[in-house]
Length: 81
Image (cartoon, rainbow, N blue to C red; front, top):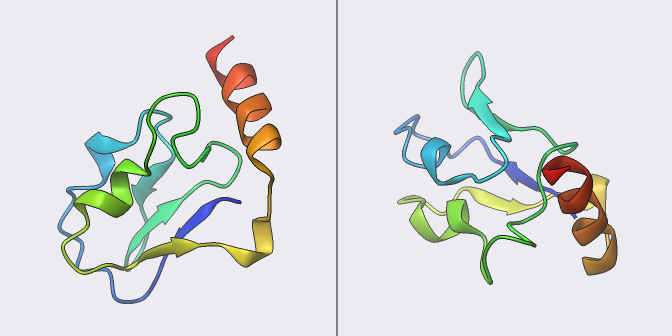
C-alpha cells in the first residue's frame, strides 16, 4: 500500500529528497504523498526511506491504497520504464 503523511507533519522537508520516486510534494498545510508514485521504496530499498528519516513519525501506511508487494514491484517497474 502507499504511504500517507498525517497531520503531525511539521513541514521539515527532510522526506522529499529521500523519495526515489519523487512521490512527496508540498501541500497546503503538510507534505503529501502521491499514491500513484509511492512504491514504499520497493525496487529501490529494503525499507521506506521517508519513514526512516521522519523526525516526528508522521508517515504511515495508507489503508485506502492497499497494495501487495508484487503490485508495488509492478508499479516500480512501470515508473522505472
